[in-house]
Amino acid sequence: MELELDDDGRIKRTGNVTTATTHIITVVIGAGVLALSWAMAQLGWILGITNPINGKRNYTYMQAVKVYLGGSMHMVCGLILYAKLAGITVGYTITSSISLAAVEKIVCVHRKGHEVDCSSSLNPYMVGFGILQIFLSQIPNFHQLTWLSTIAAITSFGYVFIAIALCLSRIISGKWAPTNITGIKVGPELSVDDKVMRMCSSMGNIALACTYATVIYDIMDTLKSHPPENQQMKRVNVIGVSAMTMIFLLCSCLGYAAFGDHTPGNIFVAFYEPFWLVALGDIFVVIHVVGAYQVLGQPFFRFIEMSASTIWPKSSFINKEYPISLGNAMFDLNLFRLIWRTIFVIFATTLAMAMPFFNQFLSLLGAVGFGPLVVIFPIQMHIAQKHIRILSLKWCLLQCLNCLFLLVSVAATVASVHEISQNLQKYKIFAYKQ
Image 1 (cartoon, rainbow, N blue to C red):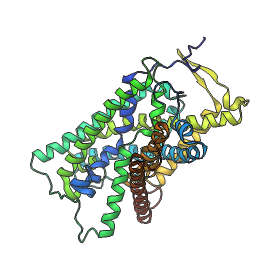
Image 2 (cartoon, helix red, strand yellow):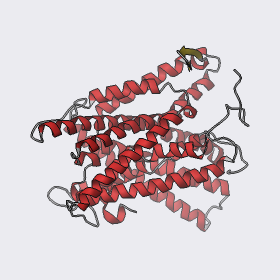
Image 3 (tube, one colour):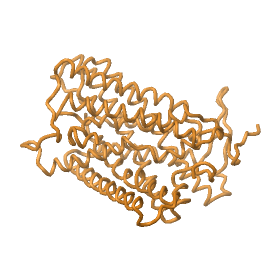
Image 4 (spheres, rainbow, N blue to C red):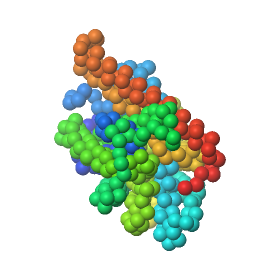
């Protein structure tokens, strides 16, 4: 069967504003939103709130950096970008296991009471999640993820609204906790050094929750050519960012107002009743991260496979597709894709089992990518695209912004690594329980 091609010779794109918005919501309203209440508790009320039309189409974030900033910056961008995307798959493996273990614990506590030890190992859940991702990772490319991304987006709204409702009900019932304009107070249980480290780490959590720049070009590459992609993406960005802002503010503010200094790293951990609603929220988290794993993992998969194809263009092992029929379903099997993606998922799962620290790992991922990928590279591309004169007022202001957020990223990275190292001293590798 002859494939219908688009204006650039690639397989015809069929995406629209709705499907692109779905992808963005799947990425931005991720599991990181559950840590925002904890971040708010560390920062307090003040800091916590705080070629477009006719040019050549860029298919990936890295390609855009290469066009505007050149080869050396392209290489630096690639190292940071794909390290972060690979790391997020580890973070999502941790998230899924914590949520599945939480469901087991909630049911156990409901049946047997709080006196019984209901803790369980996360490892079996991580292994199960990894096996599922081995199969889903064989989806060839981003264009075939719409159905999975749609399910993930729906469930992300589900668990976010459950979390908001639970926090709101606690506040209305009068069980709210005292809060402070500067966050958790320094005292016998919290030294000044720990307070500073927690504040820096919390900025990493916020950074992870508020970024989707790393996959924006991959999402745009799914859009059909007409109307123009730039016009469609403006609408998509407005819808996606508006939804993100509203939901993030509700989650972080209501969570902190409900629990104050005792706000947990994952807001669902604080609730046991109504047990069926809390369990449903955790199940929604798991379903969401199943899809989000692929939405954020596919750009990394594509980069490795395109690089291999460029280096070995005549290799049938890397490039040949084998049509496979299962009943009425037809799909293409590629041996390189099958083997390398399976090895990667196994590696990511093993790493998650060794370091299952939810808040700290999410913070590290956010910290590493936020400054360079969300602020510095986009600003430098804007300067190059608009030909902003060096040492002009606008150029100086933009460079000050770059320096500010680079410092935020560095501080959050140091704090996250510090907290992960402390946890590694406290817990045995592969033996963490919740």
